[in-house]
Length: 403
Ligand SMILES: Cc1cc2nc3c(=O)[nH]c(=O)nc-3n(C[C@H](O)[C@H](O)[C@H](O)COP(=O)(O)O)c2cc1C
Image 1 (spheres, rainbow, N blue to C red):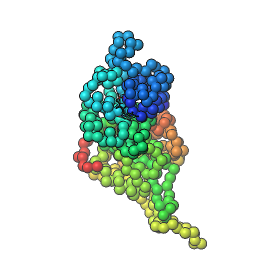
Image 2: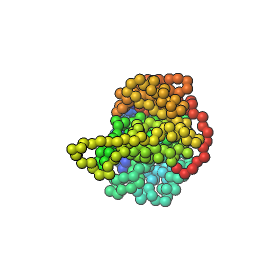
Image 3: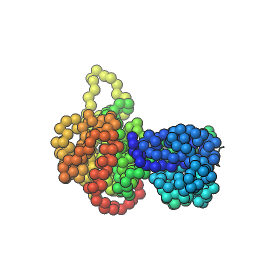
Image 4: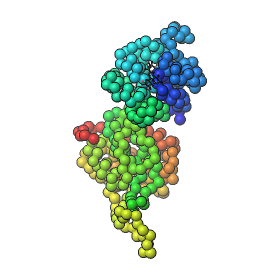
């Protein structure tokens, strides 16, 4: 909550079906504390009434260059000044083409070309319109011009077709905007984050797992993305939606997680091990469903590879950050773990604080001692962790191989 307090955002709507979602987007931005001014194209007004956006933002909506409510008679200049960001959502194929050419034939297009602030667009259109070489050429050009693109995604479309071109959901756009405003402390760093629980099969239908929800790891991935890093999220099974700009590698068992991490570690600058990894797997695992017998059930266990230890011991090891979750004697166990794993930074948390909760209370342990983060939502904790990493991490460029 309140992630966009003091941010002045101009929200532009163009004439696509997804304009109805812009009402939700306006609400989402306001909920985060942003000051939102809406500008709509003539076509956008065919899809939603300006009154809807006016009611939601509490401000008159501007639709024309010739609006005399602005004192100096130049809404295209006045409205584009003092804005931290202009977001056009939805952005039609037509509007995208206008941006490419610097057209200035209506208020929104003119204030975009007259802008001082950064511009983000959320394209929304039918899949054929999106795939059309002209649109693709235009998108490439806008990227080259430094315009940030949020989406589009793929899925069912209003026209009844299915494919690329769906506008990103309002919540996703709000998340991107929040991210946009975070300081880029780790720009270009390549980070692996592991998250979630692992699952060790007993037989074809049963297994052993743990209560990790994955929320802390996903929050760390998001905070790392916000700081400008290139993030690979290697995740056990969770019900969470991964941050859209992370490269997601889903895994099930500890060994799969280990293998995925080790195959990417050579190209990694920072490794953050948040996953709750099983120490043991079942040795006498059955390929089929075990049957109930009079002899009962005896499981034998064998140790899993230690992922953090393997990474920390690898040649040209990345900067390693571990997590310790304990139910008691947190500080003692966490200190021991950091020394045993030979890593520069460890984030310790009590399982009763962290598991299945939206909040956490991390203790960051490094060579200097302990640094406590006050209890707060996991994303705030993750941002605190990333800030701490930037104080300790010294970039040393590793060679890039294909990821
Ligand atoms: C019912 C309907 C739905 C439309 N949906 C879209 C759309 O989702 N994306 C798009 O690029 N154009 C869409 N269009 C076409 C645009 O409305 C048209 O190109 C218009 O000129 C856009 O104007 P603007 O870019 O100034 O807002 C749609 C048109 C109609 C009639």
